[in-house]
Image 1 (cartoon, rainbow, N blue to C red):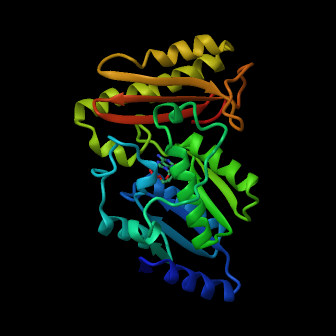
Image 2: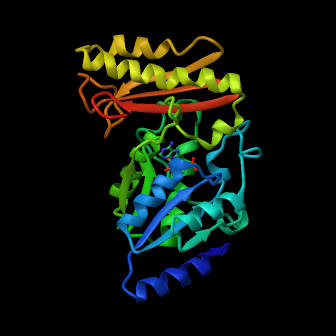
Image 3: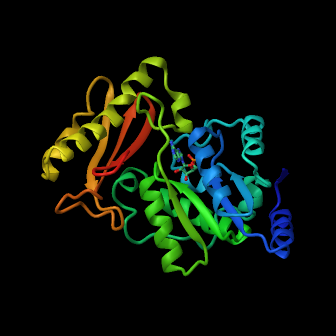
Length: 282
Ligand code: AMP
């Protein structure tokens, strides 16, 4: 496994693999890898010959007062995980390598679907995400890239970007990996105290309740969303809870098995998100 910090070295490595007729699979991350990231690496390995992981805490997607400075980092641990999953190349660029002139002149700004859900409380977040993903796609030029459904709105917007900009990259959405008690894995779970971690179960608990209500015949979006608002108790600050359509992110009307219940809430200082498909497994 090779670890490189420069764009030129990535291009060189990819060029050599392509010359051998290999296809390239790509998993972009912010690092501090957990079993959710591991599942993406496994999926990408199944879908390609050569596997690239990027680890880059992208300043452009963090707003003022967010956790950019204290975002957890552990490169040694991440490299051990990458190695164990057959990663061929790890790209760990500096901010300077990615943004040599500071703020770029040109960004990828989603004009639909980015002002609601997470976008409502994180203005500019998805512009930062799409800009860095577009840059990484330009650097790595993968055949296939794997993203988690955990960041559901992000996945929808990345699919839209690839579609609208005609990027020749196949996007695969992978299922959410959870702890046994239902908590969706997230690098940010490391911020939670034991007590906060217990409270954080209100998110997956409410989503599961919505799925059970749907299975029992409930079809009212208002009733399901009211259940999601019940997250707001016991030291958990509800941010949003909506039933939306998986491709358009529009509020579901009517609610169906493919509709997605999506929530965000703050537990202490930590902002958590989660979602489940009403008629799906989890
Ligand atoms: P992050 O490092 O948090 O930006 O996440 C990198 C990728 O891992 C994104 O595509 C996420 O959606 C995905 N991911 C994060 N947590 C999970 C999880 N619990 N299950 C599946 N994928 C995840």
